[in-house]
Image (cartoon, rainbow over all chains, first blue to last red; front, side, top):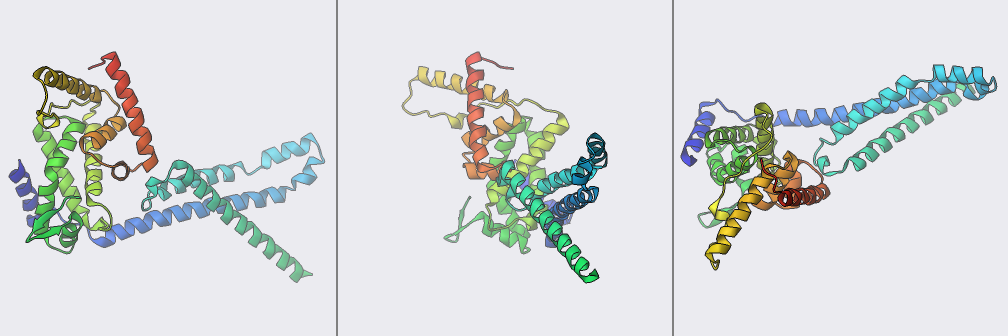
Amino acid sequence: MVKKLKTKIINKIDSGEVKMKPRWHFWVRSAGIKAGATITIMTAAVLIAWATYLVELLKPKELLEYGDLGQQIILTDFPYLAGLASVFLALIGGALYSRVGENYKKTARIIGLTIAVAVIAVAVGLIVVRRWRELEIGLWLI
Amino acid sequence: MVCAARNGQVVTDEEVVQKVQGGEKEGYVKVVERYQKKLFWYLQRLINQPNEEVEDVLQDVFINAYTNLKGFDTRRKFSSWVYRIAHNKAVDYMKKKKLKTTTIEDKEEFFETNEKLFEELAMERERAREVKKTIECLEGKYREVIVLYCYDEKSYEDISEILHVPTGHVGVLLKRAKEKLKKLMSKNYYY
């Protein structure tokens, strides 16, 4: 068995039937996974920021003054899709993140926490930047 | 990590692999020589098929390892990496053949033959046979962790790298595997 297997493998290597993949192949794959994780997490954060903007446009405090009708409008126009899409993308981001380096050694809880913190931090950053820009534009108009 | 002496110098697996990555194809023969026996028995315990089938899977393992050799980081442990490839190939094979259970052949090397009475030795062999048959009845992940820990003597860290699970989870899997084994042994539950 020993010689037979060795000979078969070496013959395949020498004949060129089996070739080593070049280093750039692995670099591109690794970069692709990292880029995929980053993009999905950023998109999840953008969706959350956008959802909060839509909720602000609804003006829920004013609508609640109208009682049941106001509540109905809030429930109908609430951006559920953005919220669901954000959760879905965060899960994909988490799955990709777990494939980066030795992240498979981390528990699902740690990975989930890392992704959640990243998404919330970026979303909060985007909301802060938007409000600051609105303030700037408002002051400029005045 | 397997080392071999060459001109009085000890050469690690990672050093050999580094040379193969650099273009010394002949060095790969050393890798095959060092791991074929270990991986053969590892695959045999997982898939439990005739030797020819196991050799085919083993060949796939070495070819796959060679193809992806440049993706291996020589700062890490080569044995864990190659065992991971063997694990993946075994899983693919079992899915393809829709295998659920395995049988493990009796191996003389697991028995101590010194200082044992004949009756004790016969009882021990029978017990070992029972344990091995019971291991067949375990689910894939529990069977794998028992094989790697008890037969291949891998550490928790190595098992974590081979199975791609957190190190803490390896201990949990092993504990559950032993509990299931104990339960099955007490029921005398064989296929």
